[in-house]
Image 1: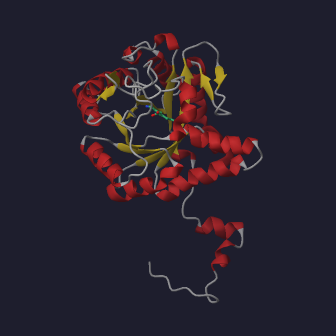
Image 2: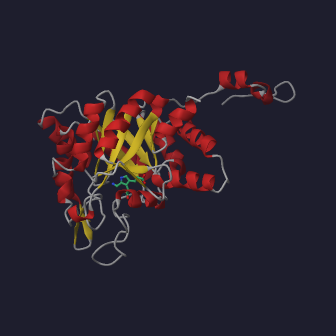
Image 3: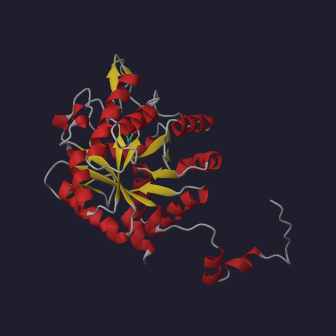
Length: 337
Ligand code: PBG
């Protein structure tokens, strides 16, 4: 940058003296168009079951999710990302319930597309809501097996798309899954279906409250049978070049949109990915980020209203085209005053 402004002829505060000039010179701003509403559904009858670790977020019944889709339409939120909390009795070692065409995710997608067809519906492709061990893939002898998992994920994606999903979002971090899913979609006449790849997803402490939200519990305690974390497939938080390689592979395999996750602690990754690939790039403001803002606000330590808009705008500033967030409806209400 070639800027030679000098005090006192140049006074940066001139541009900040009143709201009108601040608005006039603002470089990045947030609108409803930037938001994907992260939503948890459950397979019971109760309309809403609050998630304790995420004040203001509840698991919704399928009927309540359909209503929420109409609300998204009214608020101008372009898309909803659906995450399932299924009855523990339906979980097993292979996550078979993920392939149930009449399962929770498919029912929710159908109900939401029925209620508000104008709203895009995104589904997670991963096995963790369905496995009793809580991993995103198939576990064999204490290891998550890649290629067999990819086969199951491909089937899962197809089933979700047949139910009406517009975007499939593989969040599992297996190698080669984007290409496999793209090929299967195309072979089944679904060439219009979008893939948003969780291209750079880190093994993160910030997913904590999500485990409660979807009931995936604690991972194994680190025994030989079950590694107690997801570090053999999700990325190491010390890395950034690795994110670019992950993204490059997903783009080559046919990803339409890219997601970086978690969000706020990874703005450097968002910026690098956007700069390097110029692809539609999104960030996921995850459950722990939501919980931190709400917990501090509950203590009177920060103003959640301001923190919500500030944090979401920060993603735009870093180069994100949009944000997956549990705050979506509240953020729009705040933007609307
Ligand atoms: C799992 C998945 C996770 C989230 C979305 N999909 C958790 C994980 O990888 O352990 C996290 C979402 C959040 O924390 O809000 N495939």
